Image (tube, rainbow over all chains, first blue to last red; front, side, top):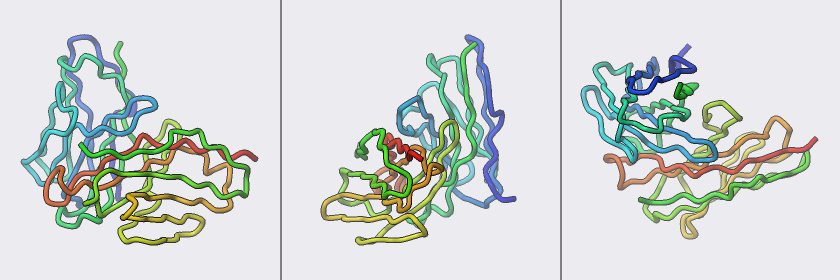
Length: 115
Length: 115
């Protein structure tokens, strides 16, 4: 099945700890994104990547880091510098950047909480 | 940054009625518009996209776009209890995030369909 796989589904972070959220897609999509969703809020963009080995900060990048070493993978690290990490994290991907009509498709998300 | 506005609801309609969800956006240059449905605790799923003025129909769903008024709407005919969810409007901002732009999401409208 083609799709976007996020893992783990639930994650707990201890104070001072970095945690990494996995996002893998087998849709052959060029662009990948990370969003954060808080209760009653819209999606806020953390980072995005148009091609391998390139990524850009979104609106709320502070306290987060990413890498894009492979087209299929776009892991997100929530660092200890992110003081309020409790949220629903969503990974998305879309086809070639050149066509603005391409929608984004989402993985099932990861719920991160502080222990 | 550009804005996408939605009435947060909840919008309550009886089963079988037409549900009308509205979205306004601030950037006249936006060209691509998307509606996502998000069930409680789940990730968003794409239900409609629209790029040209007028109506676009897909089954019980109709998206309507009026670029002059900067307004996009989603009509759900013969509403079912299974349509109860939060509906997110997303607008592509051509000036944000590369040649074709990132999506800006509204906070969503919660729809409740009563049996």
